[in-house]
Amino acid sequence: MTLDKNMLSEGDVNLDNRREKWVKSHIPSETRGILERDAAVFLHQSLSTPCLNVLESCSGSTITDLSGKEILDFHGNYIHNIGFSHPKVIEAVTKQMQTLSFSTRRYTNEPAVKLAEKLTSFTDSLNRVLFTPGGAEAIGIALKVARLVTGRHKTVSLWDSFHGATLEASSIGGEAMFRKDMGPLLPGSEHAPPSNPSECPFQCGNECNLNCAKYIDYILEKEGDVAAVIGETIRSTPFIPPPDYWRTIRKACDRHGALLILDEIPHALGRTGKIFTYKHYGIEPDMVVIGKGLGGGIFPFAAVLARDSFNDAVKKHAIGHYTHEKNPVACAAALAMINVIEQEGLIERVCSLEPYVLEIIQHLKNKHPIIHSVRNIGLMIGLELRNAETGEKATGEAVQVMYHCIQNGLNFKLSMGSTINLTPPMTVKKSELDRAFSIIDKAISEVC
Image 1 (spheres, rainbow, N blue to C red):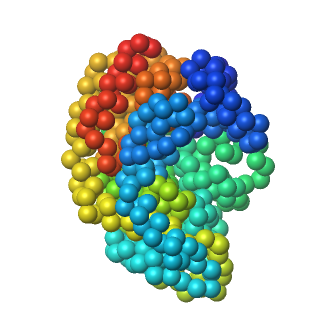
Image 2 (image 1 turned 180 degrees about the horizontal axis):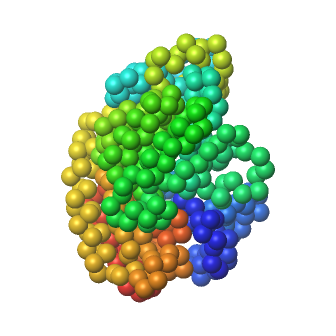
C-alpha cells in the first residue's frame, strides 16, 4: 500500500495489513491471545493499532516481551532519558508514596517547589512554571498565556510538526494524521514550511539560505497581530535547523510583538547534549514546553516555563488548573531523574558519544545508496531512506527494514514514512550502539 505523502507522520502509520501479517508470523500464540483481547477493547487508531507485541518488563535500554525476548529500545516514546526503571527514580517514587502520595490543589508541597526551582535555574529568564499531566496540556497552557499576554489569538506554527493530540494541539500541529476530518480547528492557526532540507519548498539544497525563517518574518509582518510563533526547536525525526534559523525567528518575533514558544517535549533535559535544546542556538524563547522524560520514565508529566513578566497577565485566570498539577510523586521522579543526569555526567556523556554515532551513520550512508541523508544531534539520530535513482521516499523498504530490525532485537520509530528515527537513552552503552547499528546494517543489506 502506498500512503498519501500528506498522511505521513512522526510515527509509523498502520493503514494496511502488514503489521497484522507480521504478528501472525512472528508472535507466539499465547501472546497473540492478549493482543486479540487488546484489539477487542481499545479504540483503534492508525499509529498504534494493532499492537505489535506484549511487554513484560523494561530496564535500561531494553524491553522484554512476554516470551522473554529482549529488544533494544531506541524508541522509548522519548521518555527513557536515563533508561527504563532507573533504581534511583524508583527509590524516590517509592519513598514519596509512603508519605505524601497526592497533593490537593489548594496546597503545595516541597517536591513540586524544589522541581520548579531546579528547572528555572537552568534558564536565564524563564522563572515561572506550571506543571501538567502531559505535553499537549502544557501546549494548551502556553497558547493561553500567549493570548493573555499579547491580547492576540493568532499563531504561526510549522507544517509536519507535532505538538500533541488534543484539538488545540492538533490545530497548531502540521500532520494531516491528527487534523484530517476533525472539522473546524482553532481560528488563526497559520502555518509555514518547516526547516527540512530533504523537502524544502524553497529548494535550498544542502546549504540552507534561511528562506523558511524569513517566510515566518513575512507572515508576522503581513498578519500584524500574531500572538506567538510556536515550533519544535528540532523536529524529533530529527530535522535540525541551521544555527541562524531560530536566531532569525527570535528577532522577527521581537520586531513584530509576537512571543516565541519552543516545544522541547521529546528532547529537553539532555538528549541533544544540552539541558534545553534551544541553548544550541544561543537564544531564549518566551516560553519552553517540556515533557516526556520529565517524569523519569515512569510518570506522565510536563511543564511550561515562562517569563516572570507574564505573571500579572495570567494571575486572574485559570489557565491550567489540572488535578495532578503538583503531583508530589511525579515531582519526586523528575527530581531524581535530573539528579541522575547531573551526578552521572550524562550530558557530557551524550556529547562524547555524538561524534562516535556520526562516524557510524556516515559509514552506513557510504555503504548503502538507499540512505539518502543522515543527521544527529546528541543522541537524536535519523537515517532517511530514499530511492537512489528517483529520489522518492523508500517507504516500502523502510517498513521492511523496521520489521527486520524488530525481529532481530532493535525497536525504533519510523518517521515521515522513510526515516529510521533512533533515540537511545543517555545511559546507552557503546556496545548497545554497536549492536543496534549492526542490526540496521544487516537489515538494509537484506531488504535493499
